[in-house]
Length: 144
Image 1 (cartoon, rainbow, N blue to C red):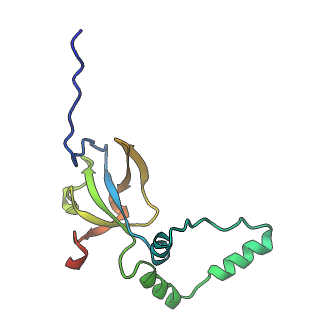
Image 2: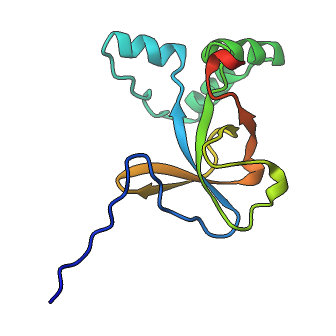
Image 3: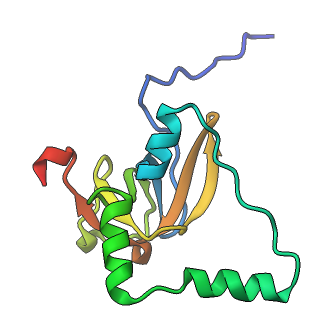
């Protein structure tokens, strides 16, 4: 019986072709100010306790309410002026319209909490649709 040939994948090479109009991105982890401070202090941040009754739920909702001015101030401060959801395109499906301008290797901004997780070669990637991408971004922060 002949020996089974194993495919040799070069480092950094991505051998996966998404179907239909999916785009595969590798998320870039942009830490918020609080996450950076916790990392420097070697702290693990865990979620708060679950609400005990309807009054706790209403109190929490009231505390999370903010005006538009508060929201914009908070959005600019949390990630220190960077967009919190960034990724690198690894593969593009065959039905993505070519006039979108997306190419493999481009850095893009995408809508937070969008996409479907996919594990390929023990690495987590995200499958997103074209409408979930805001557009491409500069490769390096100093290019902004």
